Length: 44
Length: 470
Image (cartoon, rainbow over all chains, first blue to last red; front, side):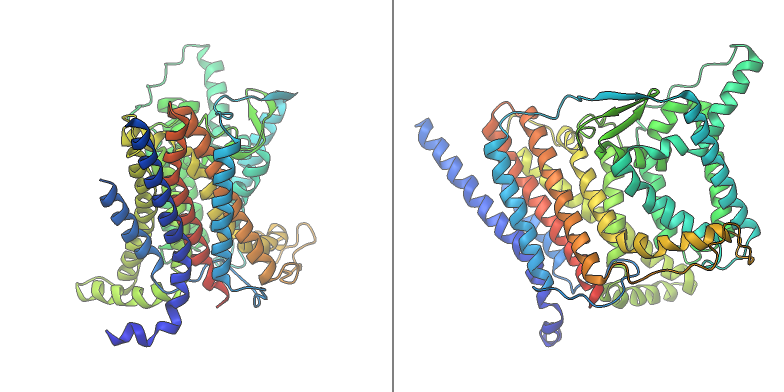
């Protein structure tokens, strides 16, 4: 388990390329949840 | 269902991106001098896509691209078609002759540079701007048309009808052919052998001619000629359309929504993106660490060193195509959750055309430096195509100028191409969603998934490019 962390300096920037995807997924999931909740409220 | 889709997405994106950076871009020269870290470009690109998405959702309420509007600006003389075909046949003959009779050094012979730079990369670049130029110069089409014309004269109209092209086969032969060419370019050890390229060129021509004689020229070219189908698909981006003896003007991208989503279309585009992505990945440190280990495994089970290396690269190549297909399928699976009873297969085909600008963006980003530098080699290779010391046009002593664009300039072109390609894909997907879903809000919601796919492809593309200067 220590090997990946020992080389952390070599690959940590790769995570930064993944971050925009994660941010967009979280934002869209939140947006989708809010819209569904609003639709349910209207339905009632 | 939604949780499963999200979990699968996280796994695929993580698998794709949580690896150390891989190198890409052919023939990059010099060191980049960028004002911000490269990963910040991925953030900037993602912001551009999100802003584009919001702008589309608010300012583009109705489908505008689903019907093709074009204006004929020029009646093309019939003789021009014949002339272009003759030029195509002559160039094909010169390349094949150079490959067979010339020096067998890849640097000295015209054939490898022509096949891998001018043909494979240059034609897509030209197609994006000028339309389907390959169709005009396609040597196999020209030979088949000439043969059909002569046979028609000899038989006086008593020619048998061609067989009906199997609909189920669709564009699968084209997808398989492009995958085969990518295998030759990226996997096969002797890919630069001029005589091999010449023999393969002749074999390819023979297959095309037999196919056209069995199924008819146009049905075969529309479905089963891998290069004709692929270059023709890319050409739908262009504002020019050459068909039926006329040159027509249309808005850029407007030719793509009318792409017939017959079987194999999605596979063709996924193959194009996946093989280009693998080309970048295979030049990076991850693959360079992994490939020898895989090779050793295969040597241990009895393969030769070359066979083992090729098998390792074959696995990587297919893995790249499967990864891209999985990302797209994930977006489609997400869209299905929006409702209106849309079938995954139907959605996959309906949105397949949106992947074409992404494929072109990957090609431009990945091969721009190859064209920028190695493309100049054509100046001396046309003067000395056989590499025997001749100087037909007085340019045999010209050299490659590596100074006309630096590594920083190339990086900006690559980033610009990736962002532009993905914004174009978003526009196409948004327009198709508006035409597909009855409720405009459902259409916008369905595009949440496509936005995620686009951001994922952009980040993957920039990540693949990022290590080229490391």
